[in-house]
Length: 283
Image (cartoon, rainbow, N blue to C red):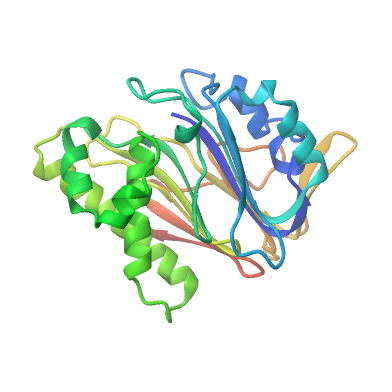
């Protein structure tokens, strides 16, 4: 079911999220604490934004995160104001391939998914039939996740470009969830969808914790905020009062054992804006 983390805030080294914390994303690739199956070794990816560049840099590899020297090297040398990191546990039946690794990127947007689209193979034809040609042709891999991103990209592009950018991101994410669920229900699929989705533009992010009605379980999601997230002498903590909220992390699991991690309620969405903290709203 994968694990992911999103960071928005003052610049940090990538390693501060990905390799240094006691329960880092790299750690979660081989020992997830909130999944029955602790391994997430079917590839990994990191996307990050740097000043003056609207489009993100992206590293995606098919081998496990714990086995990547490139990841450790880049994470130690690169600073960013906004970061998305993902370790993959492939959905049964979907190939382990680089094109299927998250995060996915398009223009200034990056996207990740933890979960599954219920009955994806049954609704896949209906889904792609709803897409305009350019968004269909923009799907490079075979995952349900990238197909969801295509729906979200289309909704974002058709949204009001003059609207508040965070509102535009939220509207696109909501539209993607609504369309996926409508397709599933119209096809008579009983299998529920688990849609923990993260959408980001480099300064803002929206992250959902969603499960279809009647789903026996949902995937975990947490948020942590403060003035600064820092690692020193092997210990990583969120510094400052949570009311400062300059630095925000949204993650599948807490990355540290320090207090302050808040569980995101089921069927809610976290809105994050750089320098403005976060808010949690119902889906």
